[in-house]
Length: 272
Image 1 (cartoon, rainbow, N blue to C red):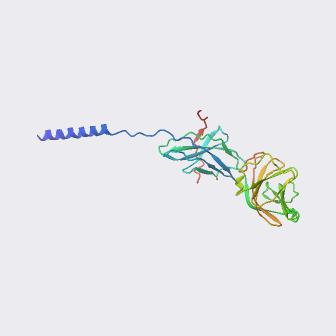
Image 2 (image 1 turned 180 degrees about the vertical axis):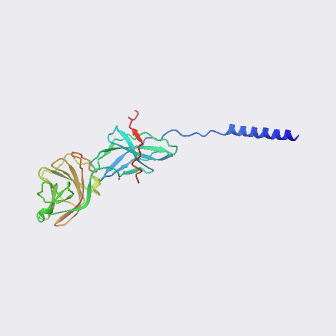
């Protein structure tokens, strides 16, 4: 009788376990990647580029990977990841053009294709609170050279612009073979991302106004911009940015991961 009870008990346990296993639904692992990020924008800086994009609509997005390449259809190398919708590439080098793309990934490790936006940046040097003096009273420090980032004589060959107090009216003057254009009031020097292609001053000067940004096209085909922050009777204080790539109109940055990451992706044409 004891053996029979033991046998029945073992039989019941096996039956219960088999029934439970049959009623357990298998866990379905999500293998669908998030949609491609959209709305990429960049702000060009000094050895730095800020990349921004729209937030993905999926609720299971864990973060974003940011890539760069040297051409739109080139090989994209991972430079970092973030849970934000912006990223600072602080490893960018002035004078080098970079193309950027972003992917989204979910908690299961599924990664989208590269974003389709054609965005690039060429970082350039800049400076803040620089001072130049009225060339009529201080001719040796009346001009400014973007190449040397310093004051020069107004008639020095390297002078890109000079400051003038003409009977109480203040001017920013450029050499005969250069051009200048007043871009109007701005909140910051980054508010002017690109140099214009028309609208240059026929008199080779512009009235200096606090809060205005001016674009300068140098005689040797470089573009720069200055934003006036203060003016007195003898000097002008300004912020500046200078594009070191000849003929490049672009004037316009949370943590990077290791730049040694070698993951790469190839951009594909979006399906139609």
